[in-house]
Image 1 (cartoon, rainbow, N blue to C red):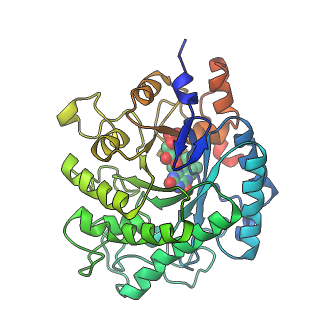
Image 2: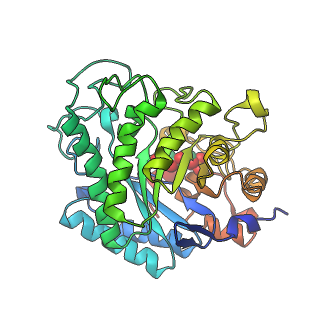
Length: 370
Ligand SMILES: Cc1cc2nc3c(=O)[nH]c(=O)nc-3n(C[C@H](O)[C@H](O)[C@H](O)COP(=O)(O)O)c2cc1C
């Protein structure tokens, strides 16, 4: 029988006491018609807080930049009505004993032009370059880039005002912040560009510093990924030295934790160095910088998530090795996506050892909202 106790040890993140190590991964559900969180959204998050999720990260929710999204059913994190909805979400999560932060999101050049809440607004990106390297617009001025950074900080300030416990910046998956990290989309020659990953991290650093000024002591998490939505083999850091340089910029700018997005949590980051069972991305970043890390990817399932958008399912998988790595301190928190999307009681069932009730992930779950 799997010993799940390491998953249920408390963890303190910059003074915020989480009751266990389970994080609900941010998952866009496009269930906020009109862009404002509603009763269904409140109930969806409350259920997970009631059922032992230690930290809930919201679905990606948008900054005030008008070109931030491709889908008008994604909730905004600005404006009176949307924020009133989010206030009800966090109050419900707190009443259920949970902790939560919004994942602040700007899709950058991943957005298809002409889509989202403001179809006429231009898309933002570091250099007007698409994810396939095509130049389709002008490079924004430095002042505009700074406004893009400030838009995250404005959302962060609102998160703090509403009573959220943490904020997460979406810096992964080829969205805006990641587009600054990535040389394919960032061809700038000013202080936001450059040949090294450290130099291309300046936009993230600017954003983090502005968020820190906006939220004081509230924990700031940034989510990053090596992989891109258009290239699963992309690597921003090809060596531990590059990885350390990248992570150091983020740590020095003021983040409290790095959420390392992988599709498979057990995949080693540098197997040439420490073998096929070596440290994963979160493990390496924690080892190199000492910063708390969140790891993620196919936890409790046997295959990775991208097929879920085509309605693919995944068989339930073992948790043992993930728990062993957590117990060894390779990373601090474990984020769970699809398993918690399908089953609001997943964490509770794990804590109570009800393993036979942990079902395979059914691709149809994407269409449900409970
Ligand atoms: C329906 C769905 C929506 C997602 N939306 C987001 C998102 O808004 N922001 C984000 O950073 N990742 C998003 N992801 C990725 C998840 O956060 C997570 O990293 C991924 O599903 C892997 O975890 P899993 O294997 O436990 O599902 C999404 C995943 C799914 C399945």
